[in-house]
Amino acid sequence: MVSLGIFSLISTLFLVLAVPTTAASSKLSADYYDQVCPKALPAIKRAVEAAVSKERRMGASLLRLHFHDCFVNGCDASILLDSTSAFDSEKEAGPNNNSARGFEVIDRIKLEVDKVCGRPVVSCADILAVAARDSVVVLGGPTWAVQLGRRDSTTASKTTANKDIPKPFMNISDLIKNFKKHGLDERDLVALSGGHTIGRDVINIPKARDTP
Ligand code: HEM
Ligand SMILES: *[C@@H]1O[C@H](CO)[C@@H](O)[C@H](O)[C@H]1NC(C)=O
Ligand SMILES: *[C@@H]1O[C@H](CO)[C@@H](O)[C@H](O)[C@H]1NC(C)=O
Image (spheres, rainbow, N blue to C red):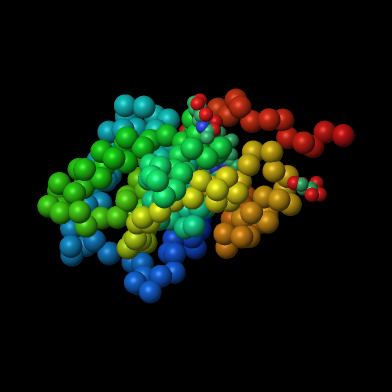
């Protein structure tokens, strides 16, 4: 990780996107699971460390999974849902199909966390958020406190995923618009683009349309 500081904003940024406003929603807090299951966060960390030591790229993939979850109706784990008769999975949306990965790692973490907690108290949305942070840390980036207490969605939207996840051929004004729509400004766009200092070399991006 070369450019440091780049990740230091991720915590607050994803917090902006974190809570879909529902009647049931209450404030997020970093100590949300401290009473109900103090073993939860250490279990997530162990599982992320194991996954990343098996395959280093997985840390990047888990960070991207959180981003692609958050940009579609908030950080609500909707990206994890498979298609049903009621909706098409976000996994099949263009920006995810054949490039979003790490689902089996998240599944394993959820099983493990439910086991150490003795019951399913930790949301998948929080697992995605914590796994993203732990991934950045294990790859040598800075740490941050993850605000917790997200609720999981029971629905997903492939259409919204196609519409709201930024595309690699977007120009700067469209990228700024896209981030604004998610409550993020230009500074956030630049800082979060630093997420690309980790992960697979991007070999599939169409040439930027900045040629005459
Ligand atoms: C600004 C708009 C963005 C665009 C257009 C974009 C686009 C892309 C594309 C096309 C890839 C390659 C996917 C593949 O073929 O494997 C990629 C990878 C990646 N993106 Fe982004 N991205 C954006 C923002 C972000 C943000 C905000 C984050 C997180 C902070 C992020 C994290 C990553 C990571 C970690 C990878 C590597 C994933 C892996 O190796 O599995 N990206 N991005
Ligand atoms: C997703 O990728 C698979 C495998 O390449 C392909 O068969 C399928 O048509 C793609 N789905 C969509 C919705 O693009
Ligand atoms: C960016 O792309 C959009 C189309 O997606 C176009 O309408 C707009 O004029 C472009 N802006 C610049 C500054 O190139």
